[in-house]
Image (cartoon, rainbow, N blue to C red; front, side):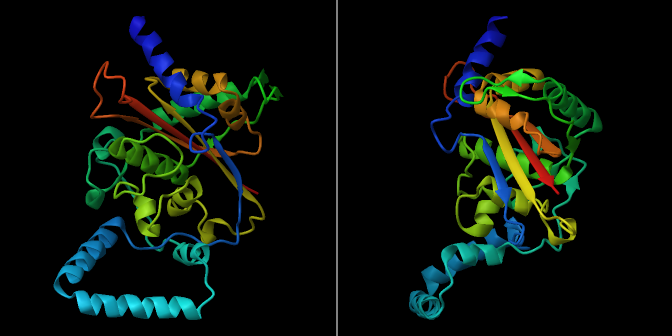
Amino acid sequence: MNKNISTILLSTIFLISCGDNNTTPVNQIIDINKTQIDTKSNIEILKEQNITKINTITNTQEDNKTTNNIDTGVNKDTTTKQEINDTKLQDNSEELEVDNSISQDEAVKLSPSNYKIPFISSADKIKYLDAINEARAEARDCGEGVGFVAAADPLVWNDDLFKASFEHNYDMVNSVIFGHNGSGSIFDITGTKLSKESNTEDRIRNSSYLDANKMVGVVEAGIGENLAGGYETIEEAVQGWIDSPLHCKNLMDSSFKEMGISKVKNPNFIKKDGKTIEYYWTNVFGYKN
């Protein structure tokens, strides 16, 4: 009993830090005219970065010449940094497929060069959906600043949103962070592709959820993301979100139609150190109308 109480208290701390923009739940409308993420894999990018590092050491003058050429090109072009990143958001011709031989808790231990999307069982999908949809089925008072929220239709599972949710858990566990922005480190799979800290939309685009072939006839799309840390069960995580006004609002948002959720056990968790989180949860929502 004491263990459960301490877990809930720890997790609540990670849920209610809504004054920090990086931990406030994500809920946004998507610009459907933007394209998808670069087709290069994380392995290819890491190899390119290594080659660049070697070239810098062995041929500094040539490297500087290349840099100058790049700078000249940018000066001639009015392309903004955001537009440059958007051009990297191209449709994934080869989506990263689920590896049915590896679990989430095993996949989180892999190096970025061996990164894989793990398998999640049908039983777990159903269990997580049931917990979320049971909460959505009941009108409730989400609390201060939000107030009464009507019941919402049940969500269905989406594998692309699961890919995005696991990717962020992978990054948070290995980079020892907790927030909606990626770490910008090699563990930030999407961030590595974009040479920046990823955000929720970046990761969802990288998961292929918004690929052009999946957006035919779509005129509006939106996404959301809830995080939780410390809870061992989905029931505890959902209750934590319900007890936090903005997370509750996200969970109850009637515009969302699909979701994916990832739970990862931190292999580096140290009991009673007060610093590490044992379980990470990322719940990603989406809709396309």
